[in-house]
Image (tube, rainbow, N blue to C red; front, side, top):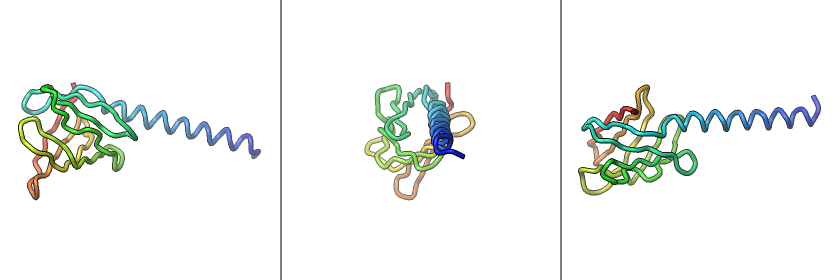
Length: 115
């Protein structure tokens, strides 16, 4: 195999990987319905992170960092109906997102359905 062919293969592989990664992540962005019937809008931010804003304007997570495929973590999440911030995990599910926040040892979660 020549250097030119190897370089071309590497560039093609890198471009394909970037495209697949971007396409998969773009599938997470969008509008969601929370269990209480209210909405939240999820967008992508730096390095594959997630940002969510509740219907009332509360920023629920600013840029949760991606820790592995389909899983993000944030140490400054906010619930629109509660004071303060908490540590949380966001997981992609078949129908949307599972958003879990921890207050000490108590870790309630919500399943958000994508609209």
